[in-house]
Image 1 (cartoon, rainbow, N blue to C red):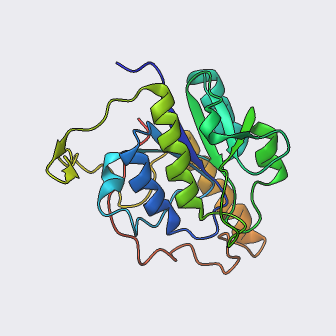
Image 2: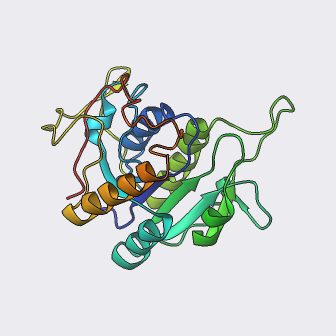
Image 3: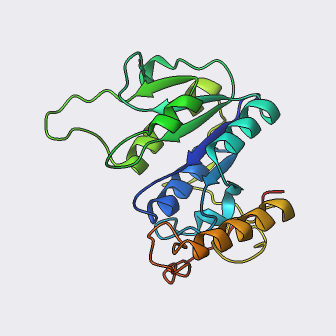
Amino acid sequence: MVGFESYVVVHNIAKRHNVGTLARSATAFGVTELILVGRRDFNAFGSHGSASHVRFRHFHSLIEARNYLKEEKDCDICGVEIADGASAINEHPFKRSTAFLLGNEGSGLSAKEYEICDFFVYIPQYGCGTASLNVTVAASIVLHHFGVWAGFSERVRDGSKFIVADKPLRQGKRNICAGTEESIVEERKLKKESAENGFFDEDGNGNSSSSSELLNGLFSNE
């Protein structure tokens, strides 16, 4: 059994449907968990059913996610960003299990996200037509490089495609990353406080059900 694991931390991604595409890349490249920070609902559009094959875990804050990854999983946290001191991804600057934190599509990593990272990697580019890559494309490249470094076993192929595992039994509501009883109580408390202050969701429009296009399944955080 491979001794290393990879994780993806999703926080403050502007285009929420990118989570579905990230889930597809996550299961293709052997990610152990896809960690959502903030809202527990997600749009699985673009996952093509793969969201049911990757485990989701939810935290309310980056600090909670960091503590889980560092204390329980003994992970390094790697920021994917063209930052000062960042190593090129093809140099494989990994030492142990690693969680990858990708920045917002427009603004990159925030100051709070920088603070929880142990090191940074960037993806070298060789053409002149774009300043950066789409977050899901960047994730795929980074996760593939980590899998090569970690020695993950290649999935068995059948003809021109890889064999897909049987779909696991769905747990809980669709496209809602299940939380512990304590986290759900805390979430309800925060929602109540936000509503009293005239806010409810991240769009500030008082509508928490803006996920009418949500599609596939989810996993609890057990």
